[in-house]
Length: 540
Image (cartoon, rainbow, N blue to C red; front, top):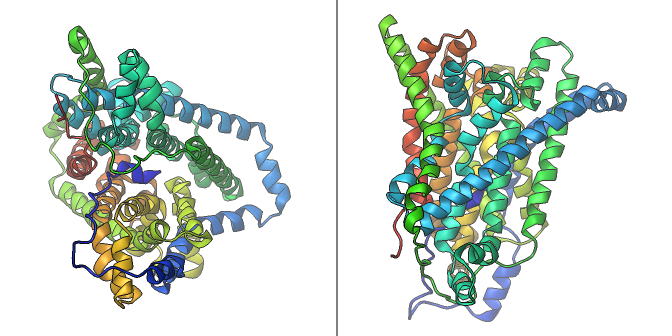
């Protein structure tokens, strides 16, 4: 799923003449060999880390018996909450699919004027956290709240999750099918719908799943827009009651919904093959001429950029200008920025180290264990940050009190939340590199450790780096877990912004929001370059 956000690296060519080639017995033995303990043991540690919140939810939900769980699940309010959350996720996902596909086609397959420029702008909303966008919208349009407000903000921030994988898929796709369809007399739209769109199914399914999960787990936008979704109700339940069992039960229900969505995504892909047979025609498709529709076509990227970037930028500039009159929080602003960068860097480092064994195992070894380890990593990602934070508070207070409200617990929360982002990137990169090179190394007598260090990890390095960038960006924007787990006396840009927004001090909040967006823009640009989303060039 997430790996489709990361364009696979170019695979090295076959072994050169004179290289040692493995015998058939050696190759077969290598393929049948069990996963090395060097990867299995760290992989089990990674799975255990990802499953920590579920342990808490299970203990908290069932400690008073199954009757309490049934009572919470059968309440009319729970049914309404589930329906409202699913409606929001469905509406946002549908809108993001439409916007993402349209923008990807315009910037990759058409002669849209300035398409490289529009490709850059289209991916930049990834740098804007939903709570920053929500702050911008609500500060300029106070009446924008509820379902519609949450829908607008989440759509404006989430459509790049569809745009990036679809643009990458369009750029790598063999255009032969579409060319055959055109030769049979089909119009450009008919050829796209019948030949190209089916090949985009994996990218669409993966992007749609990410948007749906992101919407269900979002806390900032729904809270600012005062829309009662799962995360806001869970947070309110935790804060307003000593009995946290109902909140834990709602967290388990959210996990169940996520598992259903993941299953539906896997079913939507089916068993069809979407890869080229043989060397194929590794070339880009012909650019479609828009003709008289070129100028009208500009309305879509211009409108999307205006709503997702222009309006937040205008709000931030306005409130920052207002705040300048009262004096900017200079030293506080710099300290919050340094703290944000430090926490995000530690989170990216630890998460990537935990992801490497699982990603390599899933890409290189078939079997039940690698699949279980990879799927276990989604457990924490399925939960909102507020639930993960409270689970780690519970576990640290009871079993590791010296670590309570210390940096290691916050970094652990980042790892639990964002493991799938790094694992997906590592998996995609390792899967695209030829396993024959590892088999050659084994046939020469190299052990599993040497093969991993000298062959596997260097081949997967581009994906590992891209995954680390994606995790760093996401850690920078994470709000609820940071809000509850940050060490005493520290403050990040996100938490400072949230504190000021909570008392409607928009002019004081704006500098934190503006600096957070600026710091997030660089990793977003690097990610866009890695995926090829910013590459507007093509054959004319």
